[in-house]
Image (spheres, rainbow over the protein chains, first blue to last red):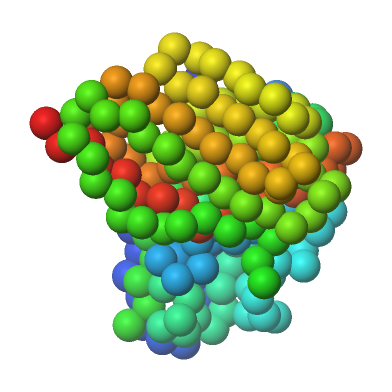
Length: 113
Length: 111
């Protein structure tokens, strides 16, 4: 298995633009997580899905952020409009049910200028 | 106060040294304790996990949990330059999906 696949690996965009990050979880995993990592705040959980249903989105910082999981093999995290303070590395992770191990993707490094 | 506190370092030690990494936490409901290793420009990967209190050993790595003190540790014996990475502790409540991470400690092992 190729693991969790995220795209793009790097994204540079101008303030005010819409940004869409993509994630393909490991096949068969039914839980999917979106994290944001910064030097100041470390790794923060933004939202997670179980069986494609959003369970906890309390970590989503603002209404500018939205996430979807239309099927078991694909999820998106959208920021509209983007701001410089959104610059961070965004990770997607997946796990199998209540198994403790979450497998992370390589991350998307977002820079908003 | 954060639920999980971890000294971000950086920590630099010579090759062969014993490394001790630590986290403290405030939520007594945490039951699963994990250590993730993250190499530069990569995603975190699970290194070890323990349930409740006690020790767990895997090769050169030992994880300890002291629930009475709300304190967990990761020890690395005979440290190698390839161990240079950021180490993140993570915890969760039994039955919950949400992992709460520490900030991570950047470790460098000097040859």
